[in-house]
Length: 343
Image 1 (cartoon, rainbow, N blue to C red):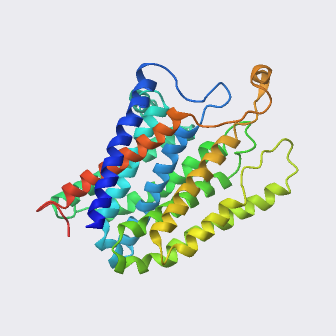
Image 2 (cartoon, rainbow, N blue to C red):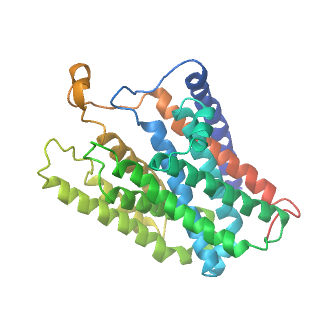
Image 3 (cartoon, rainbow, N blue to C red):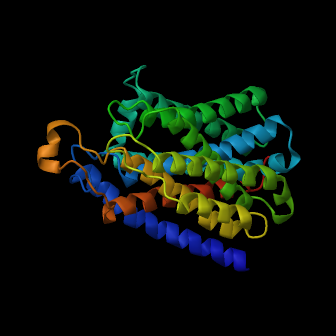
């Protein structure tokens, strides 16, 4: 009964979030820019909302597809809910991206105006391919029987998910003139964030008696991201790079360690700590690379900028999360209707 009431509350909050965030999305599409952006600071919270949801979807996809390929019985038993979660989160990510880009048509144009030397194009294309592959797997789920090429489909989904997370990091790691971004560690960060956020959400999708299978990989991913951030923190604190902005804070790995300790006994508390922490890690990373103003724009913007998200930007984060949950609710209802489950 408590679970049913909680689900109803989440559904009501998501519907309200859809209306609230949708208002600001429509204003951005049809009225004019509402975000805290300028000529030097152009990637803010709406883009981070896309990154966070897309990477969390990636983490769930990697868990699901790797579990299928390794014939893990617990993962296979929970495949329907994992699949709907991964698919819904990615749809929510693209919903946030359409608002960030100012028009849904801009997303379509991004995909169909190929620039093979652009990491941004590859990022969008790979996530579109992942969305397609997850959609095909969901169609097979609704049919109640696997496709003949299920093994190849699962293998392709795993490869595309990993590639998408790495390429997303390369969007920042190869940015010209932005020393706060550059380096392969940007791709390492995005992949670790994907695995940590996906594995933090996964226990909430599993039945309690089946969560034991997630203990080692889930805690390992949280520990891996915490160790990576702590290493960056130590290096940054001793850095001699001119005008470098230290974005990693000590509370980031400490909170992730707290989530790790709570992972086994209180998975909901662990997720409540880990998911906002990963979101803030991604936000701090994206913003810090743009704080230094380059070239003559310093004349009117100053040498260093500050950033605080406004109501419209927060609304887009809520919009993406609301779309994701509403899709999750709908897809689960369809998959679990009589004759619609693969179980």
